[in-house]
Image (cartoon, rainbow, N blue to C red; front, side, top):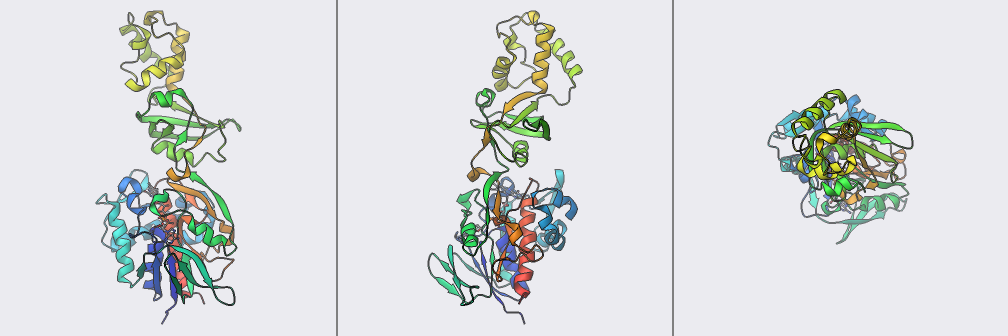
Length: 415
Ligand SMILES: Cc1cc2nc3c(=O)[nH]c(=O)nc-3n(C[C@H](O)[C@H](O)[C@H](O)COP(=O)(O)OP(=O)(O)OC[C@H]3O[C@@H](n4cnc5c(N)ncnc54)[C@H](O)[C@@H]3O)c2cc1C
């Protein structure tokens, strides 16, 4: 009988799966969570719908990992997206696959995922302690013996799985405690930077069009230093007081590394369905219809209201100029702007607003087959606390689940 005593620190996506799985394998598991409720962040994922995984192969999954994808090869083959789906369905949560292979609960309710993981823990006998872990206790040989929480000491564990997350959305409990706990046993922490985050801009158009959501537009991101297009996408984005955000921009942000002020520029194609020639014909027709009106009114049918005034400013054509006086050269300038509205990028929004943290515990100090620390033999890691992150699409939760499953198996069986 396996009766290893395991402490799992952090009751988020990774911690709950690790705790339940280790207990299912026969370990005596205590899960420590600083909040009074488990899975606070998980409950707000996917805009409250929880994009729980991506219905793809392990190979596709690896392609969507921003850094250190190879480290995940073993874990993702042990617990694949298909396994995640089977796991939640077996716990009574039916799932559906949407655009881009994104998987959600049929109920569109992230709480169902949280409750399923909690049920998995409880039905396998996991003890839940709602205390914040602050330090380790050591055995004479230097290995970990117990933990110190804000309230008391807990001694007598054989193994520890650290699942405290990154530092984004700290209001959910992930404030970087895991980095400090790992550093105290000799681990290196790669400085955390935001990923899947809004971008700041000093382009006037952002503040002037604040609150405007653009749908069915295309973006192209250029690394001006390398003179290379590094990202293209089609979909939705949003102008904000600070710059730009929305699904496409969050995805683009994962590609902007290293972030340096004004290194990247974004151009927005406001009419991706029209090629230059067709757009020019459309402009000619619109201008003909409105030929006696002022240029300020030229775009009533073509552009959203909030965008018109700042757009006209960018054309450098006087708003009071009569449309029939607009030259062919000026019309070409207008078309070029519609097909490539430039937006500068000055930086990332703060990490506290990021969907995920890039950086964290260096994976070269962790065994990929077991998630075991190479610095401390009875310490394991799972989830975002490690230097692992991915694009949007359910890949980040899949990282949490695959690494948690792997750590649980190893922690409950290693001698
Ligand atoms: C708004 C938002 C939406 C997202 N949507 C998606 C999505 O749809 N799909 C997707 O794949 N990813 C999504 N993510 C990312 C995903 O939520 C994370 O990658 C994932 O939750 C990481 O899991 P984790 O268990 O490693 O960390 P977390 O979920 O952050 O859990 C860490 C837990 O550890 C606890 N903890 C921290 N320190 C201590 C301590 N000292 N003692 C005890 N407990 C502690 C915390 O309270 C927390 O509960 C989203 C993130 C955000 C912020």
